Image 1 (spheres, rainbow, N blue to C red):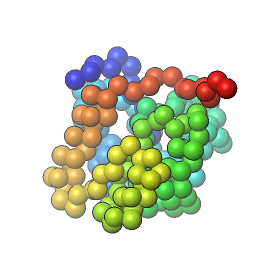
Image 2: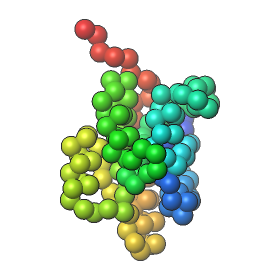
Image 3: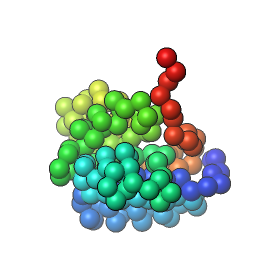
Image 4: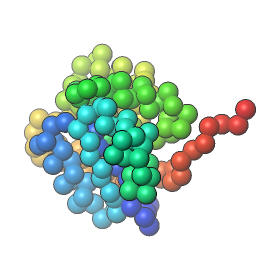
Length: 156
């Protein structure tokens, strides 16, 4: 597994407090340094990514290396957030992992049509959910090698 020397920044977009706590605990258990930033609605996720409002300072609100995105969110739903990210030249390189309770084919296909990098269904069983989160952490925090700087728009 790759050993990252500086913490990886994870943006967790999740409105369920129980799921949030479980995800943060599972990802914090890894031996890989990471910093989890949590927002609980779609509008706050876009504010964070575009450094608006309370997220304006890039020193305290760095660009994430990976985004964990629920679909059922208040204010803006997860698909709207995904569309905004993947339609932005500055943001589309950030991997977005949809983590949802829905296994409906229309949700899965909508996420992939909007360029989600992965789609995971939250298991109902606590042990399976924990195992899935550990596997997610192994891949996205360990094996995957993220882009470390903010991309500029492509040259004309």
